[in-house]
Amino acid sequence: MGPLDDRAGVKRDRIARLWRVVRILEAHPDGISVTDVARMADVARRTAYRDLHALEVDAGVPVWNDRGLWGIDRREFLPRLGLTLHEAMVVLLSARLMAASIDTYDPDLTGAFLKLADILPETVRDHVERTVDILARRSADRAATARLRLLVEAWARRRVVEVTYDAGTYDPARTARTTRVQPWLIEPSAHAHALYLIGWDEDREARRTFKVDRIREVRLTTETFEPPTDGAIEEWLERAWWIIADQGDVEVRVRFDSAVAARVAETVWHPTQRIERRSDGSIVWSATVSGILEVRLWILEWGADAEVLAPPELRADVAATFRRAASRYAGEG
Image (cartoon, rainbow, N blue to C red; front, side):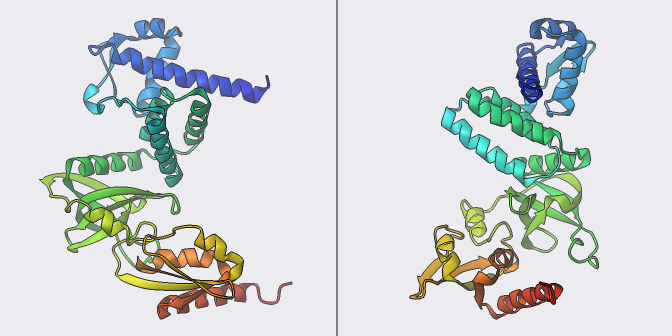
């Protein structure tokens, strides 16, 4: 066994020990001393202190301590789920998508992985533990975590939030603004490596998509709201290419050369897509999407093998982008 195997074993032992401490705390709703935690977990008292601190700070477990007793605030937990193996795998894959959607350390995500690890087979548990290890190497942003928790609470309890949003990343001339939002959904985007808040912007009286990373302040109000009718959010999101669904519908048509036609055709990129096959092996791909911002990036990924046929403004934009790119490499090779 080499040093890498040794380190992997230590990580597995630590995760198992942390989960054992959680179970000990759960079994003592009135609290338990550190000495007893150490005895029941079969660790040194100092290790028990470190584990309790790690659960609270690193994993986001709602640990409390009062006059020498430690416990878990059960009000912060949802009822335990009796998941089958396949159901747990679906949750795990969803959590991995979430992990791919953010680039900072999230203690709540780590806590979810720790709980999943307890009910999965050893071979799958190894992947969970490696994911936890990767997450632990990311830098923490406690202020961002606090803002996200407020947004999640508002979403779950249908509470209006007041947010200060900085949209100046792409346009420095735009200043931050404060608005009231009815949070309908928090959605991850693996492509953008970000979370998005989707809801109703009361000030602009319109549906809006907010990148969570650009939300600078969150204040939870006492006011509640009625969500959209059943299925409305899902129907609205189906128009999006990835995540942005608050722009007008646009009919997009793209011709793909025979070199990539099969790869394009084998995937359903959008629910409204249609494919017209041509005798030269190329295809004309079309779909009705919300705006051109996101689908533009997808088209650019195909390089010279894709030609925008419609709409005219998208064709002009993509052509201008490639001309600028070509000018950078002019005279080389």
